[in-house]
Length: 203
View 1 (spheres, one colour):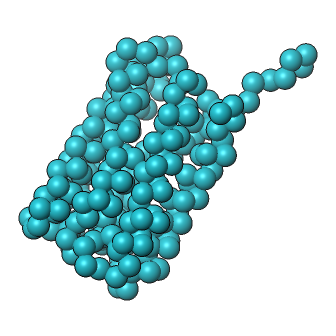
View 2: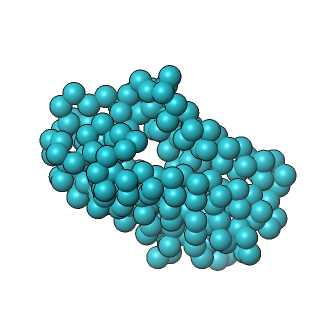
């Protein structure tokens, strides 16, 4: 695939459509106070539809984008490991459909909830490590290295904050902020790396 920018646009559209459409389908859902996973919580309204038509497509497109962009990303060694650790995010979306949380996404609950919690910890820690390792990409300016490390620290901090009881009413917003920062940074980087090569014979 020589021009993957259309895949970046499609991912963004499907992700936003999942957020907006899922919230519209879920009676009483609060994007501020509730996790995204609660859109597909076991036993809730339209959970299967949201999971199959929302969570899984987002995960599949994110994974496809990472695979398509791999030849264009100048990573090697540890930074290549970090790049592929970003697959934790697509796996989390698909895993959330296969192992949905219980109503309210409690800390303890059914086997599905336990698997969901384990997947969440694996995803956030894996993505944090991936972002840190991306900072070791050869040829990066010092400012860009610091930016990747800062993004990783912010991602991990927001993960901790969304689980803090005093911030319970804001956990949905904190989760979205974390995703928008990381997904936005990765999509912008992918867009720049996917810039078509200049045509032969042009200055």
